[in-house]
Image (tube, rainbow over all chains, first blue to last red; front, top):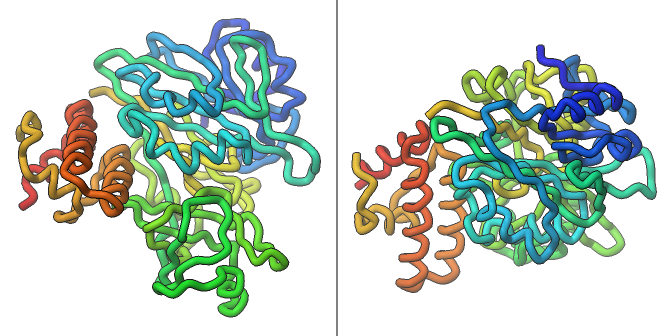
Length: 328
Length: 79
């Protein structure tokens, strides 16, 4: 099993050795790291080599392999994030990290499928967050080449691969739409008041209450053979609104999700062949970490941060995202 | 297998959802989902041509990747 959790001192040494790193950790440990070839985001929940764990002392390290022949790291703001796909190397991949519930997170969630060059070049990543038990903190991203931090920009690492290699992103999602009512949203967004239930406009909160629906379940839609989940963030009884950790889309039919069997067994059953040895980057969803009680449990030998959102070309939820480098 | 012909009518059928196909290449699945959703709202000739070009360009660019290669073969065999 590959080691991924390191102390700040060990990570500092890796950076000084010139290694190229993707990092996840608490603000207090990331902010003191030296300048170098790394990007990072705040997060204290991990699927580590010894299983799911929480730490504000250790840093999860994904080291970029020597297959990469060139790279560039930069911040994107609200006006430039639309260029993130087209600015990637022609043959390569990009990793993006953005702070949760910022304008850039919301814009990316809603609009990234419309950005120029969407899906033409592999883009994976995650949404940085905070310790759920600590209020008043804000999520951050770090750009190691500038030794700087931001709480409203996205940080991106673009990597170029030699012509005999390619990067492939896969997702592992064990959820599928259940047999219940059809839910359609009137607008794309993170928050909703009224929805169409089997074609009839209804207040969503009333529907959830009247039907005693467990909002720990995600709503799931079939995006052309790819199951996409949306997890509930909050149900506001006073405002009669429901909010989500990802965006819903108009003209898409969602249903409450169902899953059969044990989470770990199902993940390994859905995992692509050889993923455990080939992946370069992986992340899982914090809702899986919490909802399936993954503390101390392993998803095979796949490690990565348990995040506030996963990115595989676009924002996802309650999914595991993996990026592999393969030979053509 | 030949992916050099964007004028093959199958690309139009694909983006308009006239043939049922779930790609195994993730990028193509997500792109095709977005294109079909867009064409549901507005499907002028220009929109359809633009959408055909987008999915064709993605597959052309990735034609040597195993999952994309398998998809292309399956798409070109669709009726």
